[in-house]
Length: 322
Image (tube, rainbow, N blue to C red):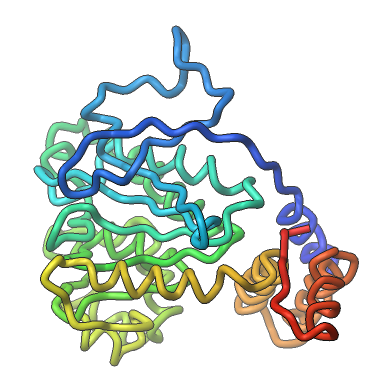
């Protein structure tokens, strides 16, 4: 049963659909190279699901890199007045950005970062939350949780570049990514206990899986905030780097990692991610069966043959995700 389940997940992961994208350049002093991206066939008229004011759209800038970096997509959060706090609109924009990349087999990695200096994401937008009726809070948290789950379920590698404070839901978002990179002076913590609530977007589950149960309890119970160096020591982030004058050292380190991933076989990376993510939740025997199911999916690919040919001919392989 576990093998069959693993095979179903593998088949779903391989059903990629690539859609053309068109890009609308947005003005901006801090990140003027970022674009708002929508599918080429998306409706922009009456009844469109993507109707926003210019200011609302600007809260998330999505850039599909090109040239040697083709295949890397950057989600840039841009809510400077609210410290990138998670609002209804940001949840909507991020959900649609995730939907746009998840079935695109040309996307090889996703970086989520902040376009606001000194902040990654301050968590929930408490000003907006204060205006919600009690009956609205639960559904909103469910949507935010679903978004973070979808981000975690993306088939390609995801990297959180934490160049500033990542608190509450901001850290939960980062925890859903495969890899986290921070600046040394970044601040991170699940601080919900200070508000007499608990982490509600996966923090109580992902943090223990990341740093261990006992340490996770200590940090959550104390609502403790740690810097990048301590986060790296705890295993909360993979790398902590000295911040630079432009305030984007974590992003640059994340980009360097994505560039390391880019030349590798994209289907192999997706299958490795699937095998790890599914296997870590089960016993070793079942995990090995999942690995076998994932391995079987790379055997018939053109990329595998290209890898063998490149090795034989002593050249760099050109993988196409086929």
